[in-house]
Amino acid sequence: MATLEEIAELAGVGRSTVSRVLNNDPRVRSTTRERVLEVVRRENYQPNFAARTLASGRSDVIGALVPMALPSVFSDPFFPQFLEGVAAACDAADALLMLWLALPETERRKVDRVLGGGPVDGLIIAAHVVDDPLVEALRRGGKQFILYGRYPADDVSYVTVDDRASAHSVVSHLLRVGYERVGTIAGPQHMFEARDRLAGYVDALRDFGMPAAPELIVEGDWSEASGYAAMRRLLAAKPDAVFAANDSMALAALRAIKEQGLRVPEDVALVGYDDIPAAAAADPPLTTVRQPIRRLGEVAAQTLLALIDDPSGAQRRIVLPTELVVRASCGSTGGSERNPVRSRVRG
Image (tube, rainbow, N blue to C red; front, side, top):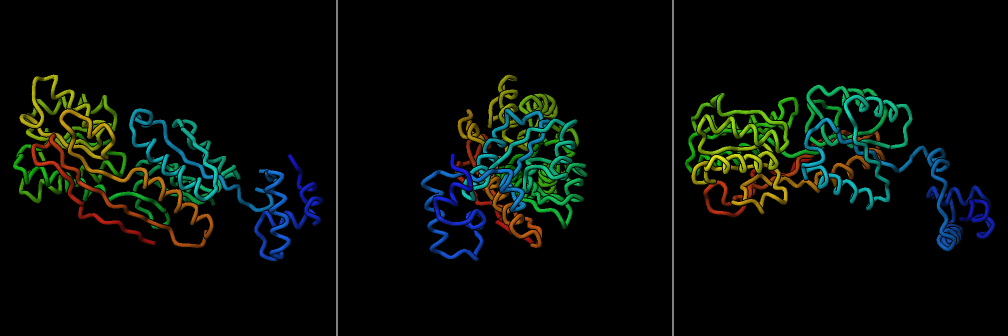
């Protein structure tokens, strides 16, 4: 592979001129720039990564951190779809993506390395909890970062959907159909999206004049195993419909219902959240809230890159729209219903 000095010699310019061309310095004349770039292309020259980072102060590397403390991190299709969107946006911007799967005991140590001058320009945090020490450390550090999921701080950027309104929409649909004992398998209540989906469930019941019965609320942890166990507990309370806070728990709940000799939706209606690919293939097909998972990852990366380019800009809080997808599991006519929650961007 050619060196920087060899590129300079072949182009008939000095080494510093080649460096300015590679760093898009506007002071280089267009004819000189094109001559240097032609040699770079012909020789397939790749700038030294460490040297370029040192010279520009940028690595063009984005980090995506997925906490492995989540039981569903490898089984839930959410994360592969989200990261696919992140990777697509990085590719389009000619940025590199570094993926970290962080155990709780190493998560903070990895972030400390990044804040201490690690190899990335910014971080995407794919999941976080209430009062997350990781997020608080990033707020005090100098790196740009963005979260998936809302966070109640004005100096934090995030991309999300309106989980509360979306849960309200799907539970309201059950109540409009005529179900009267609607239970829920909630997500882990130390996470904002789980709290918001439970709040949307309670809001819908209240709007229809129904109390939230404690025996009809069971907490899961997003995993299939927790959804199955929660459904077994809920069946003792005799619900006529159940809202599961994600599709993985809903599909496991479907199995638990069938194992008790009950039918969906004739005996117990069932709805989920996410619209993962398995939802449409279930028997019966699962009514669910479709959130644009891949697009969430794409927008997260695009927004982070914009924040890196302009660190003085305002923090961004982006809310993408969801869609209620009505299928046979809720006992009403199939189709889709556009959620009243619309896309919002707040600076």
